[in-house]
Length: 225
Image 1 (tube, rainbow, N blue to C red):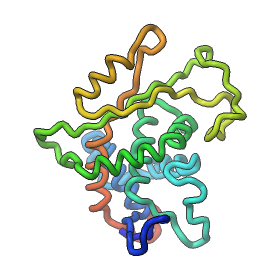
Image 2 (image 1 turned 180 degrees about the horizontal axis):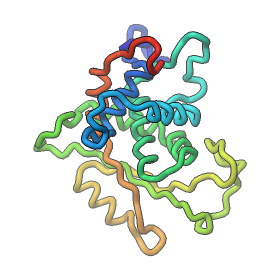
Image 3 (image 1 turned 90 degrees about the vertical axis):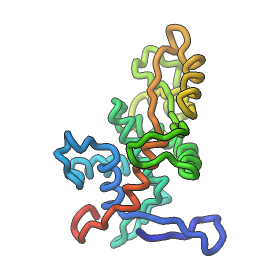
């Protein structure tokens, strides 16, 4: 773990940063099923390549946040690794690479702020009963059938670098706790058009991810640079 001085913050304010190998380790430990993965502690090579593909569509770093210097590797803050975890989760639900990058581009500051709020009073990173409901849910709709799209001028859609029509991801909202989720659902699903939602729980994932990051070993030279 390294530290960096946050832009715009007072001198002496430092934020922990992590190497790619540590980010990969934490993401794998958080998102994979140990039983199905054979209990492998370190991710397979294909998982690292998936990470690199997300980086190519500016997840979790914007171009100006990258090192861009030969011989130096990118470092990631915990909230940036959290962006990667959200991206991998929604890709696992069926969104493509381009749509995922597009969503994170628009949601990145909101998601990073939500991560920091969660970590002020996080749930336990361990599978144990908790009296307080600290769960936080992200809800949105992904529309994939383009006949259902409103007219879109692709050239005027910020954050879309792909070819063809940009994705239509609508109504992103957060819900706090199970009661909050029920309340959101009461108004979220309406009629024939608004009849589905992708729901991702963020708080437990953030807590487990952060624990794994803080305990992630640094890979030896030549592995996951």
